[in-house]
Image (cartoon, rainbow, N blue to C red; front, side):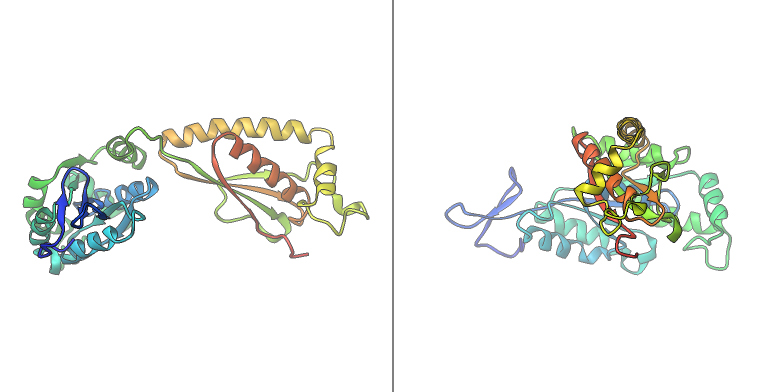
Length: 312
């Protein structure tokens, strides 16, 4: 909504603008600004909101925040929640932040500021562990950059709605704090990818868990099945009529449900289960389809990818 537009009125209670006659024009997105000390966990906090369904923009110049909100309002509800990461990498624009916040307030945009804090000792250790300079240290030491950044961010920290001290927090604990603030009554979702592959083409580099189906007979050696793949009913029936196949599927599905519960507690949002056989054509494909269906039935959002299907 343009603050100079006198034809429409802002509905503060619903977060919408209305045209004369009461027709809803646009819903104003909810806005969170993530800032704080470099090395204190801004990227982790932003990733957490992204996993919760927020539209996240990293290092957006503050002067463009009102424009981003206006674009979100025109999205017909597709962008209902926006998170913007503001930090000293954009220090040329940082002085514009207070002006942008005042502009947002005039447009009746609900805005919360999350400030990530950490002790000097913790920040020094983190920068030294990754062997990177502080963005403000210049020719000085890391502690000089930290001091300069604290001075620059002092007023913003005072305006923050939520300050999180990450000095003694690991990544999972920070995600848990963000979930507690922004997930509401919704439980953070876990998304699974079940990927079939052939061992002869190498392990998937992004696999969290690997399943080896080569303990079952290979349909490749059955002449009438060789031309088909694990997507065909004949091959799937052959695979799961083998001793131990159905029992394996049932027990591994139960195991994955237990692992999924632990992943949720630890703040992990994505898991890739790689299911392999020799060529990635028969056993792994059939098992991936069955396993994915079982995970969906257990309430886990799941997609199936057949990496090596068609390579032989």
